[in-house]
Length: 430
Image 1 (cartoon, rainbow, N blue to C red):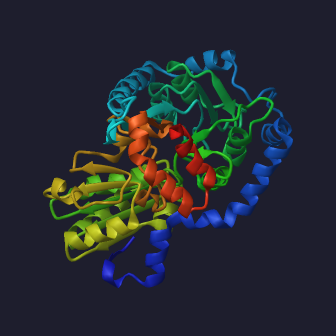
Image 2 (cartoon, rainbow, N blue to C red):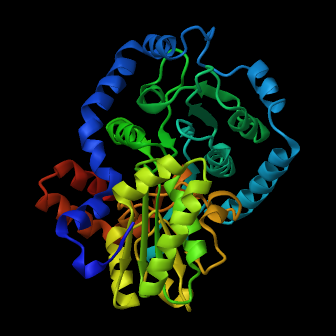
Image 3 (cartoon, one colour):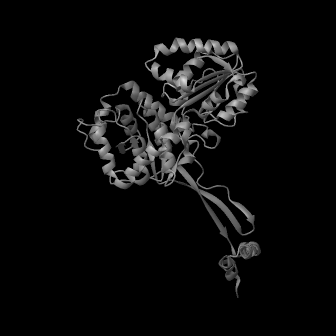
């Protein structure tokens, strides 16, 4: 990698960095739509036909995970893993519980005898997508399922791709079982999204799908929006670091690599006011990459969507960050709190040298399902509020309706909707 001044970055490279892998969705959309339609039209048959091709010779009998498979999964994990999951469950539950909305919003009385308020209700059926193509993500099980449980969702199903053995990785199954998930399906990619969107003979239809995935999963979720709701377009991972001369280059490099190893379509960006920090970070990357088993994947992601750039001021860095709208943003500056006050578009923010990106991925209790590809400009991180919706309620007394009667009837006449006028008028006849 080479450092470059942001103002010297060629326009085509600027556009590539800004678009990152989000630009791939349009290319793969036709193929994804075809897969979605196969499930819509053929239900289970499409799912089992795909499984037969993927798991030939593996004695694959059911797309639904059995109790026997979960029991076996516990034999394949150790005590440290169980203890780690317990701590995650505790911390995620604490953070997410604090976000639970009040069941009833503040009551407003715009006129005497007229009251309006909102009441919060959980979405009844939700589907969770847990990625597993390039890595194992038991953490994502907890991040998506615990808020659903706290919110009060009545039906929670989970889909995750099986490995070559025809089985979902043991850590993923154990994490799901430890929080009581029972409806688990061995499905990945667009077929999983389609199954939860349309429903099949085996997989229930849901009202909203949650969870991150690769470009194909993100494309499928966007197509699912034609039928149901989704949490956000949460695609390939990305991290954006703002650093000044007080930052630690070894820490920066480690955090960039922690994001880049998710996949070769991940995006890693460092924006710094210090030329020395830029140079030292590059040296650290070159030192750390060869030591990692994910080196090949990392090198590819850094080449495709990586950037180390120098700016003249923190103001310039902040402006670029808000335009980029990163999934994760790390602020490693002398006064990170002053910088975060000016950040308007980001999924999750990490303050200071000691807030490692992996802390938010696993253990702080903050959610790691976040908007990507610039979607942080309009989507929030996953939280309790995503698992429910507000229902509006209003009540009028006779005196209250009389107070607003003239407005109702005037607007009904203007909009040429006579029945609207009668619905008010009839209550005051005789």
